[in-house]
Length: 313
Image 1 (tube, rainbow, N blue to C red):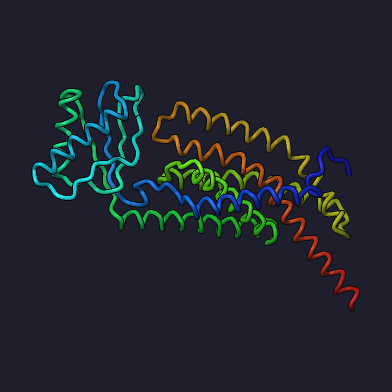
Image 2: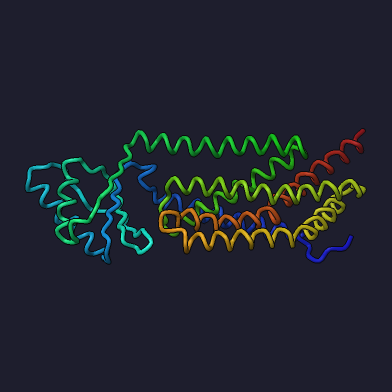
């Protein structure tokens, strides 16, 4: 069989690269953890519609003033030190301020008064709060969503192909998700509910690309006589080379769409877009270099086991 690039015989290199990334991710999570947003760890967020240019230093200074005024009025346990300050709006005229703790209703009028004194009476403040119970419930539902998606994929791929293909695909999907988690941990990017949406989107894209490759492998297996591991390797190499241009074109098309979403979609979905960009490349990588290679190793072991049984008989 003719093919341009020998993917399969270089599988140990790809497995090593993925192993290093996985180890790096584990260390990062143990040392740094994840920068959880208020969706998961509880707290408050203020969307401050200022309507004119502002700086992060000004926001912190005004919050400090509001904190001092609240304490002077006898309000206890006031802490207005923000964990994250971002900009939003078409002209970046909105300050999105996150706090690790909840802000009491008594403090909001004081914050509003301080900001209106600085920027004018048109300043509007919208507050949203997530308590610990809601945060835990969101995290639990996010985990369930990923688990149910994985079970659905296993069932579908097993029925359409075989269980070895299904398990290999799930390992590749976990590889993709963990890579994105690793990048968010290392870069200290905020993990909010849109991050989970990005993970599920990546899962859908990655399994689609993997199934296209599996379908070509199955078609080529029907034409080949499989007696040894080398025969399996040739079939998979041929299939990967036949679908390579399709995989590259697909990832580039979606990449440019996600890139446009990152630059023009607004700060509210920056993390979603960034997770999607990371996931697109690792999804293509795992479909080509991980999922099919795991199946090759597994199928080769089964072939070897059957030969041994025949010889013993």
